[in-house]
Image (cartoon, rainbow, N blue to C red; front, side):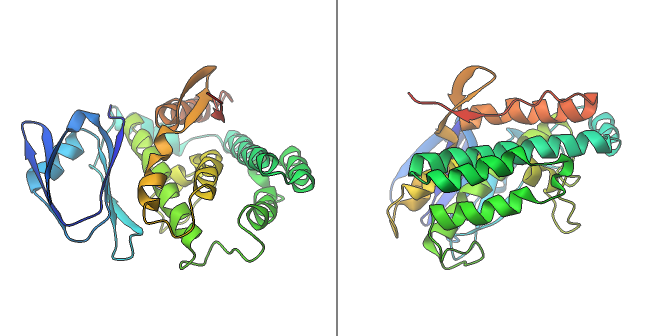
Length: 290
């Protein structure tokens, strides 16, 4: 499995040669496909051969395409990446409702706890205590919407009282959306590899969203993106490269020190195993210091 996130942000031609991705622009670069986890096409002036696209799909590389505003617009993935897909999909359809609500409770609580940890780092002691209370009050299925209440407090403190997540022109929103899309793509990739459908979520159930399950599972990872984005200088021309480094951020999972990218397969499998076996054994990531 690959470990690199490759970003193409200028006019280029991409070809396949002896299992290497050949990127021709002002200079030529070669990257072995086995090293690539995610390929992000930032520029609309990039052309790619069908052979390169097919081989990237076969090697389970996630390909994200951005629009003229440099925002993630879509992604390419094969029809199937897993094995025993029919069996997995039947299991998924019959996931227990009570266990789904319990897993969602754990996911929301972990997300709020990670937000709490970031507020503590930023010195917001009073607000961090409020988030801690919200985390302890989460019910199965988050019926009282503690996630939404925590988010309102959290974003107003981390990014300022005038910050709105729906403001597409805001610099930090662009960074957050880009980082979240990388995490979501990684989640979707692992869900596909395990043979499950990304469309069938635990909480998210939007009929127009093809990634409901990925959107569910990614929630505890959002604060990791937030912390990375906070430390980017506003209007930096290098923000795309800074954000794309999110998969190399250090975390700890299952009592092991690793990276975000390496932790995602462990986390996703623990979630799907919990839902299939009807036993809560989710393994969440947490940050660690070098």
